[in-house]
Amino acid sequence: MSLGKKLAAEFLGTFWLVLGGCGSAVLAAKFGGDANPLGIGFLGVALAFGLTVLTGAYAFGHISGGHFNPAVSFGLWAGGRFSIKELVPYVVAQVLGGIAAGFILFHIASGASGFAIDPNAAGAFASNGYGAMSPGGYTVAAAFLTEVVLTAFFLIVIMGSTHGRAPAGFAPIAIGLALTLIHLISIPVTNTSVNPARSTGVALFAGPTAISQLWLFWLAPILGGLLGGVIYKALGKD
Image 1 (cartoon, rainbow, N blue to C red):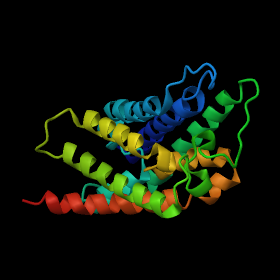
Image 2 (image 1 turned 45 degrees about the vertical axis):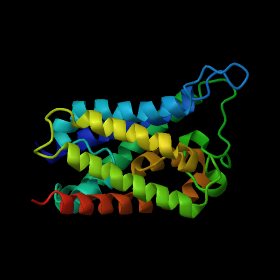
Image 3 (image 1 turned 90 degrees about the vertical axis):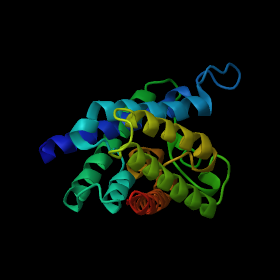
Image 4 (image 1 turned 180 degrees about the horizontal axis):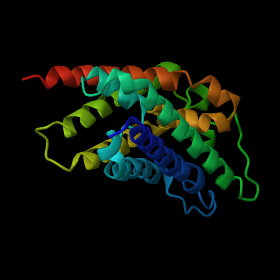
């Protein structure tokens, strides 16, 4: 498969992940408001993120490997499953896909009467954050630890479910369910990133506070991805 096709698949897969996951948070999580709640809530948003990865992996995995996440690309490289020559192009394609999805989502959301983004509100426009920008008011240390550990385990699930000895054809299901579980754990802490492209795609539209905290949602997931890749590489040796 040509690199161009791989990058297009990564762009589209990341676009789908951000549009589906963040779109559910922005458009559907609290639909109807507190007085008439019809929204899907945390559980629905967690499931939406899992479904985007599951469906995206089946759609694009045979083309690009279905990373859709810079932390996954770094982790697979650390685990010996991905060439460093394609690492930077993959990350660029993923970030562009995330930003494109954020752009589309912003214009969809702004079509509702009274739509406005409070740049100082926790989780504004599905952004990630810590401290006052954390949905549960968690500290920067708690947010960092959460993102590192959960991304590391995400990589372990990805590498394990795609191993040659794993049952064939079921990897996207395991990966999608893992991402759902990750969101169920960490939405209150950081609004769940484990994906720098997802964080960047909405932070650019959420405002300066979200952008100022974006460093953590690049550093921690990539560190976690590298850690998970190294751990599974060691475990996977015969």
